[in-house]
Length: 291
Image (cartoon, rainbow, N blue to C red; front, side, top):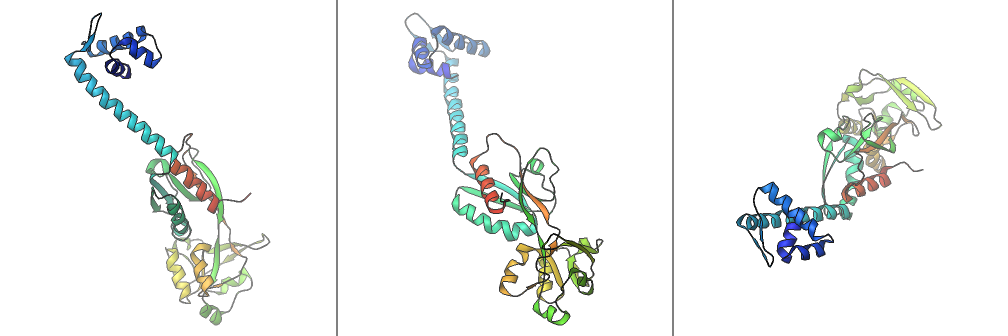
């Protein structure tokens, strides 16, 4: 098609051949292949001049449009590779996404104003390839060999309670003492009535816990702790502001639930777009493991 358009625009096979760096014989071969495929002549040729046939004139117009569309598509793809732009879809666990990822992404959006972010919060395992996400955050070990998994800082859950609760019930000095306290855990953990905690020196302690209140949402348990209903075991990011403001007090500082591995996952791509490349670099810088 490009060769045919060159012939028409330049007026001869020889001129088109010079412009394309091929022989006039090769140009003629291209034109014959077009005519064979269409089943009609596109050019009337004499020894002195060539003119478009009716079929050739229609075909020329459509070729110009098609080639312009291809040129635009390739330019757009190159632009997407060079500059971050377009829609970027992410998926992450609810607590991490709300309290850690969203504040960080505000900076990414400020740095890349042509990128639009769509974040889905889901505590299930992300299905990037099935659901069309570009990037996901996974708590737990990856099990999809079709994804790239880059380690992030482990996901830690710590203990905290309101000053009013600790004034009433006392501050535990060892994890074993949690058995005598009201412990606020997710309702879906109720079948696991033991918390395995890890200490500052790497020592571990498994303690049977109990409590009169449970909920299926982390922020609800945080609010329960703020109202003096017990000791909450929640992600660091969920409790950080309340601890900084003194609304909650650390319980057993240095101890936490066994940290969970966390990964940034995405599909492999030998030529990633600029938006994908930059968001991966940004998230690894902000949340990645330091070596």
